[in-house]
Length: 98
Image 1 (cartoon, one colour):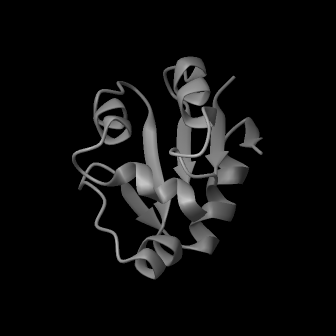
Image 2: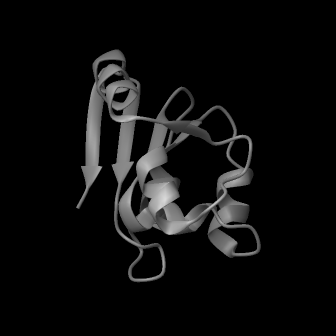
């Protein structure tokens, strides 16, 4: 079952991102929104862990990236809210890490 994992908390405040990364399977997707978008910044261990993922689609909400003045790696697709809704419908399951 392909799952879209949605994470909004800062990777620097708790271990949710690390826990999520351990559970990701091939064909899953990971959407970072809110403060979770800080994980995409080059030079931190979270960005390195994201870059090492195989078979997982990576997304960030464009609105949240722009609000924070961030520039995610090219391998991470920036999406808007309509695309978020389409992704939620395309995956078999959506898991929000709150």
